[in-house]
Length: 210
Image (cartoon, rainbow, N blue to C red; front, side, top):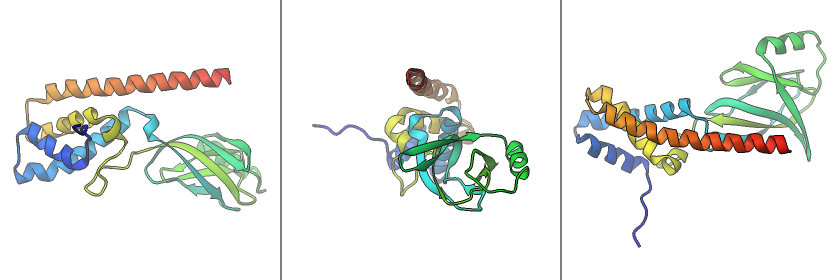
């Protein structure tokens, strides 16, 4: 039985060069850049289940600012966890949290969270003890590289990765095939977005029925 094709960083690189009909050193050296730009492009256009992660950590007493996970993009929800007990923490704007915290110097169980900056959250009130918490968030998928041959995109959206990478190469090569790759890329992205819409619909249905 013939093994099915699996997209990896190495064969994506070689396939892109075959499509471009190029093997010169300058183009080959730019392939990693084209792949990275494609990954960013896809990440900006969709939020898939494959980009969702759950992280559990601990807030420390007296620490209102908490580091976000690596490759964080957008927070979905945050909860305090205590055994089987789960207490939601509610999203608020930074200004609201600062105003709320300044109205009282007392430390207590956090009720609100918000973005402090791109790398940190801020909670209020400031924790009065160590609290376990759980965050559901969207991340930028682990980037492809020679030492990371596959990721969610190569496994679930290989056509989007291929045509997206080819599309990113067009300005560098000043090539007139952009329209062809654009159409193929849009078809692949359209299928991904349709899957996302179905998952979102399912999640809303579950939430309404729960």
